[in-house]
Length: 117
Image (tube, rainbow, N blue to C red; front, side, top):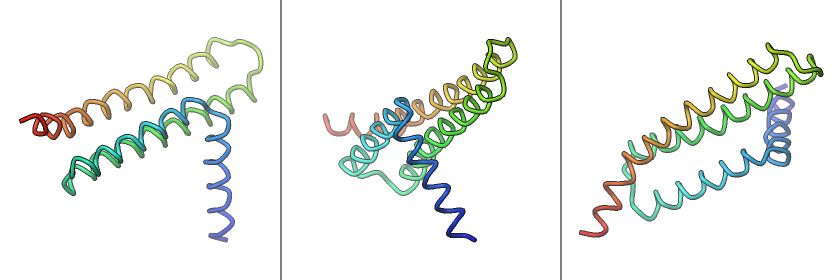
């Protein structure tokens, strides 16, 4: 039972990776953040913040994609509520991404400044 659920979840990640350009861009940003964290020697708490933010952005992008797919399936014609649902889902990702970027700056900027001192 658990194996089947895990298999479907991995299948969902792979489908998202293959079909969604924004998700691939976010994966690249995640890899850059991890590389920067390794090079700058982040503390445990800093790692937790960065990984939580990256995981949140990636997860919410997948949720946004799922919402868009369901809305498109249910409402193939342009409808104000369908557009509203998709816009709100995209806005959800944007809001979290902005806060994640601010947290990234709070974590990384002091380390970068310390390199130049």
